[in-house]
Image 1 (cartoon, protein in one colour):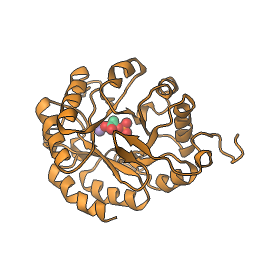
Image 2 (image 1 turned 120 degrees about the horizontal axis):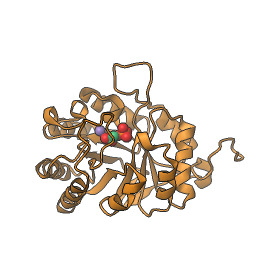
Image 3 (image 1 turned 135 degrees about the vertical axis):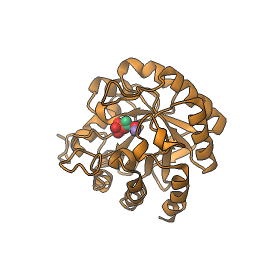
Length: 268
Ligand code: PEP
Ligand code: MN
């Protein structure tokens, strides 16, 4: 137990005494800028990822998300394009000058994913994969650590502590909703986590209203609410053809919907 009565130390606010800013190729996460990470749930084809990347780049977005290895609830669901998905992400990110955010689903995939991404995403289902967190602690790239769907704030910050303790200081937290009794939304997006994390920790925190609600029309209001709550950024799923998306179509914004949202977000 540290002197401030919580079990994490390196993740605690007092460890730094100020909020951390993480820089990725000149773009900042934390501080005054709002970081927007957008893209499809999964990379599906060259045409799909190129269309979306080109659109995002024209909108001034600096971070492209897209899963190549997807953790799906059903083994019958699309599992991602795997190595080909990584290759396509790299190709379009170079073409459109975007930083890549993609998930490393398992320790055995870390070496493969590492070279293809700028930020290593740890999915909600892996927040308590401590062996993976320890290895990420030795890595030189920033880690986006999603909140486990059953994780308390303390468990989440202790998961971050594993990465920090290994020597990797660049951890970005991502609130993506938790499981509650309510089933009208896919998850219950816990926006109180944002000011709580700001109080307890120096680490930047972003919000994923797409997994957080599972419903397209809730993405804009919850994005604005996340900004109002003090989030350092957003992770938003968009798709050029959501009706035919291979994963998470119902929560994916149309490009026009995303473009409409940008001036509203900037107003904050
Ligand atoms: C995703 O970002 O597509 C995803 C699978 O997220 P989570 O790990 O939060 O469920
Ligand atoms: Mn998704």
